[in-house]
Image 1 (cartoon, rainbow, N blue to C red):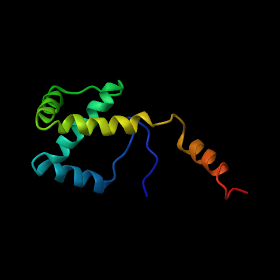
Image 2 (tube, rainbow, N blue to C red):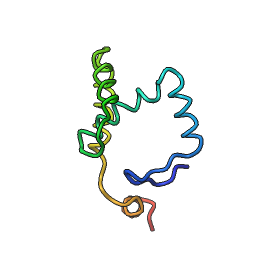
Image 3 (spheres, rainbow, N blue to C red):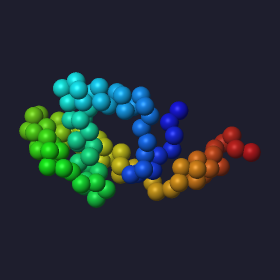
Length: 101
């Protein structure tokens, strides 16, 4: 079960770190998958892309638009984020549950 995370202060489990490094070794697949998500975050002003990330994003967009389409999915998910502490959101949804006492 995953632990609650906050933006800019999240922690990866040891297995997540292992699989990310393995994915980066395998033709840079994990790194290249991260670039469109980071581009979406940069459009919200949450992060800044490095020069290499900007380069690879353009390359991905040129290759069948894959970078752009991946970014669109992430941006849609970010647009649905509501700002509340996880405990508050859980308490609110539990109170609205038909099973609540």
